[in-house]
Length: 308
Image (cartoon, rainbow, N blue to C red):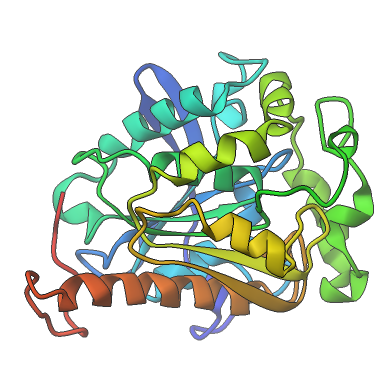
């Protein structure tokens, strides 16, 4: 490797305490002190934290990219996965997942170690958790914004086709056209796959009914990203309007499109492009807050202010 290799950044395993429940994950600390912010990455159903650390080609890892741009990046195994699976073998519902992640983040890198706070990057079922977290005004867990990929509010398939504990659903819907992925991405993805916990699988079919109430509570900027070949969720004009309509309290809500990508965008050729766009949205959220009439302006080259 050479010093310019973007994948030289160290990624290390971590365990966070969520009120007695261990939450495992991966962490990069970056080079900025303090960091600009903490990016919290939440994987989808049947996956693990390594989803955000693709190593099949240099530059595809969100953890390594974020660290190089001055952020701490924490990819968590959601409750019911990883270290918490032994304690919760059937998984947890959305409310319980949110409570555990909130506890874990409340004790994570307090003070200057958080930079400006937490920004959520979430995929698929992880997006449901991100939106639920975004509805809580908890001063212990200051949230900046969220970018959610691979999640809508109207299924493009029947609930019977959804992934569950005894199957991962239609394989093609997860990937789309194989040309959108490095050839070895599919070969190595097996190491990232985990069983979908029973309770999570039962609850996901109710998401369209749950969404309006959860969305109405969101108080942070949120962006939904749909891959060009997203096949689990409708993302036509009518579906997008229905997705954005309940976000009445969010200061900003929008939908973006990611060309040349399938549902598992962070494992594809478009991963770097998508991750850069997500982190650019984070920068825009910081800018909007700093530029607000009641907020102080700051030098954008300086470390972000500490809020927690």
